[in-house]
Image 1 (tube, rainbow, N blue to C red):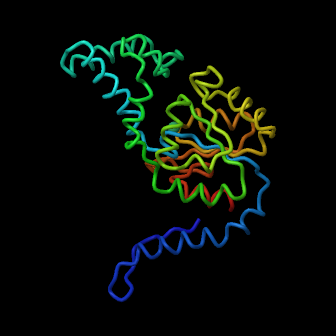
Image 2 (cartoon, rainbow, N blue to C red):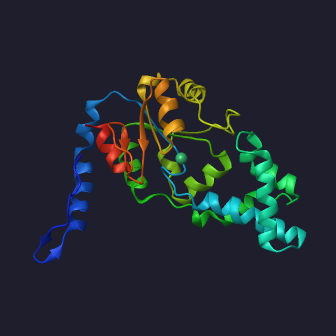
Image 3 (cartoon, rainbow, N blue to C red):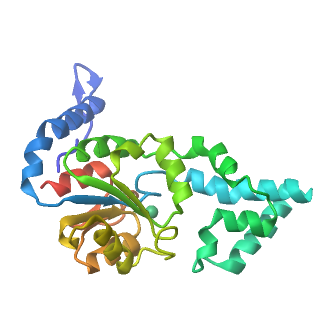
Amino acid sequence: MWLPKKPFCLDGTNSYFIQYIAYFARLGENNNLDIMRNSYKVISFDMNGTLTQDHFVELVWGYGIPRLFADACNMPLDDARTHVFREYDKVGEDRIEWYDVKYWFRTLGLGSGWRTMLESFQHAASPFPDAKHVLGLLHKNYDLVVTSNAPTEFIQIELGAGSLERYFKAVFSCTSDFGEVKKTPEVYRRVCDALGVAPEEVVHVGDHPRFDYDAPRSLGIRSYHLDRKSVQRGDEVVHNLLEFYDRLHS
Ligand SMILES: [Mg+2]
């Protein structure tokens, strides 16, 4: 892959930015040629940590729900947060209820305004800077889908915040659509079945080594682990979505 190795000076000006502009231009120019090199039909993206940052999810569970509970019970926010987190722990992430915001509104007596609460934090659902650019390139030649364990209601808000929804042919939530709490090989098989494609025709990229790499790979899906912290190295490890794009066409 080509990426600027070091900043260099041009007429006394740091041109690192210029190199990145050139990189983006090169991606656009070569897009149609690169596409001839593989036979993949579908590219599947994880959502949180891959396309969008985690602030939205953290705000909903760590502030939004405790804040409403504090107001409902007329108690300090810290006390409400302690109570709510204890309730989260009682359920645990292996149960489907953990992911269901409607369940928590019911259980904690917060009324029916869960959608209003989610929408109030939409401003925090920001995509990573490389997501929109790479989706814009890839959607011309592939069917793009989201395969996430986030509930559908969360995915809709997050895609809407970044105006990303127009790039996707389909969105799959393993919790909302398949009743699974994690992205198992069976979830990926059902995604392939729904799309009418073989696993070998699909590429998946995501930031969880087990659920975004091991699970789809075990089914025969070409998989890439997105390690945005740049700790891991390997042929199927990428550190941003620009690198994923390049690796896909190399
Ligand atoms: Mg993720």
